[in-house]
Amino acid sequence: MKADAVGELQVFKAAFFKALAHPVRIRILERLVRGDQSVQELQLALGVGQPVVSQQLAVLRANNIVVGTKAGVSVRYAIRDPLIDDLLEVARLIFNNHLVSTQGLLRQLQRERRNHASAVKSGEPRRS
View 1 (tube, rainbow, N blue to C red):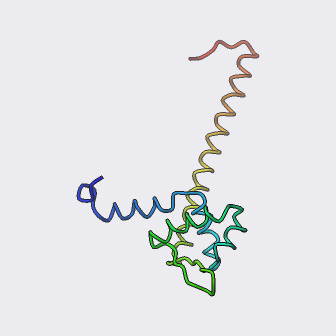
View 2 (view 1 turned 180 degrees about the vertical axis):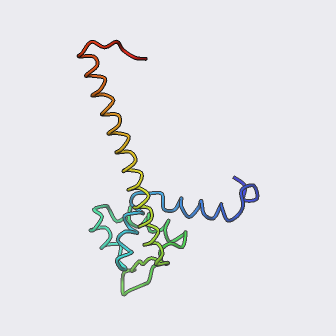
């Protein structure tokens, strides 16, 4: 996509959300909103290897979502903007709303299946 066709702001927004679009990156951010951590601490907390954590931190760093600060021989990572916590919370609320809606559809589908099964047992003709 060309920046001029959709607007530079939309390209920037898309790149930002693309940087968030990985499960390990989301898990890293969920940890970092609680406080800064080293690669080793993240590795232990997430149960993934050091190369995976480092690779995903590099993406977040390149997109200015996290910052690294040298602390002795290691680097401590932190969220660059505390509003990331709000963003993650809003996403949770949106997903919750989606799941509630999906559960409602599932209940409706289950009612239809029960009604259909009752109709079949009672010998009612099938509706198309």
